[in-house]
Image (cartoon, rainbow, N blue to C red):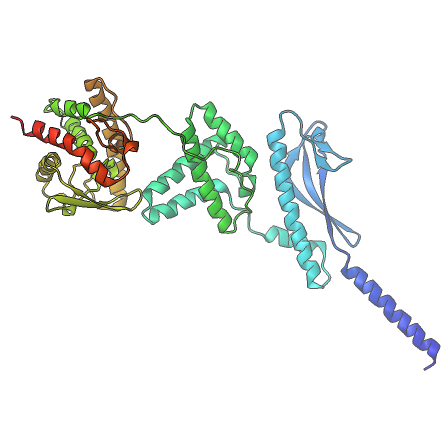
Length: 414
């Protein structure tokens, strides 16, 4: 074979290699386009234009905008007074969807094989839809209920109902839950006269659900709750002194067993180091023995053992004998099934709070409501409650002895 012929073959091989590599490096491109309506003055449609090897295809979306909302020169959306919320949502959505398409193109390019626009479009359309946030909250509440976490499930439902009302019952994808929307939601709550701690409660629940979705790979972490208040603001502490407790004991409530029960629960919780209503509701008879009772706090799981003082013993005997067949001390719960018992507890708490208001009206002194622990979680000095004065249980016992003695003397008086 002559040298000139070999040279021609070599040149042909190099030319074919260059063409082949050029084909492999020819990536598909995607652009956002606006397709105007054929009817003058009507909203047009946003679409994605794909280009690859002199082939053009479009992916039509359901996003519709007016012509004045589009800058054809810069190929981008235009924000005008009144369309900020819509354009912000569309902007985030187009960025996310175009990023997904680019990832599909990158995967096909890395494969080293030739591909067509039809393959890109088919892969994009076969992707599962992005999960919606309200739907995720509802399913999360259901899972919590199945795991017997009824309080947290209730918090999820309350937050979901509030956010759903703000969104006019329209669900949104995780990507739409951005800092701008969260700030608007907070402003909406404030406009409805929701206090600061309640706003913070909704934000903390929604943030916990969002972060859980991020950990499950349903969304990327954008920290949408970074610009809103999620703390717990200090509230005025309403103290109850010993004279108030003694005045409660002097009330003749024989005509109203419901008021008498609320009074006895208030006194019992006060003398039991500020025992909360939920812990009293779930207190079982088997937990009381040898002058003491032991229980585990529902809120923290802390195990506590309390000595039964004479005034507390009288209350325990009264309600234990009244329902010998019930496993519970107080007549708040009647069912041992966890879910039904929790519903009875919630009903009993609301009823108890209303009765405390009536008792406060009889005394002319507002009694703390709803959390009884805030009212009772503190020792009497002379005998005045000031929870933050003392920290240890031993200090509480020493300071509370005088009040318990006063109540016991009054209880045993004919």
